[in-house]
Amino acid sequence: MEGKEEVDMAVSNGFMTFGQEAPETARAFGGLVDALAAESALDEKTQHLAYLAVLAATGELGGIAFHAGLAGKVGASRAEILSATLVGLPAVGLRVLDALAVAAEALGAEGQGVGK
Image (cartoon, rainbow, N blue to C red; front, top):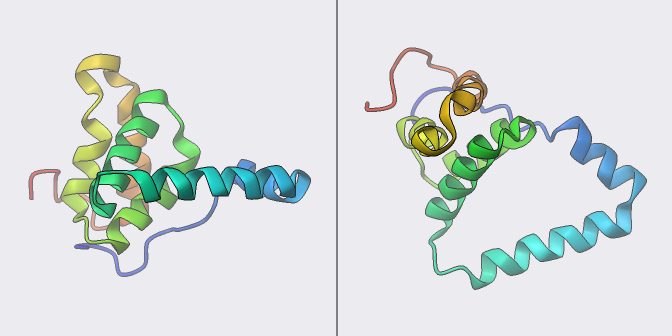
């Protein structure tokens, strides 16, 4: 991944609390996520970018930095990650801009744009 060497991979406060307060349910949820990934026809990079697009479109900002980091770890460039956050713009409007800002901050190297 281009840009910042270390991406902010902090798990959201809500997800941390989920693991602490409902550990069995959190483990089951993790199993569901693993099963979905194992059965997906998408390669790992595409899966992460698609998930970022969904998070951005639904306004779920808590996981953006973490999942941007995961996407970068499997080879997504900064531009690809930022572009993924904008995929939903025509459908859901400007709400994706907050996700763009979170991802850009997590990735560092500000101002390079999504097309570079």
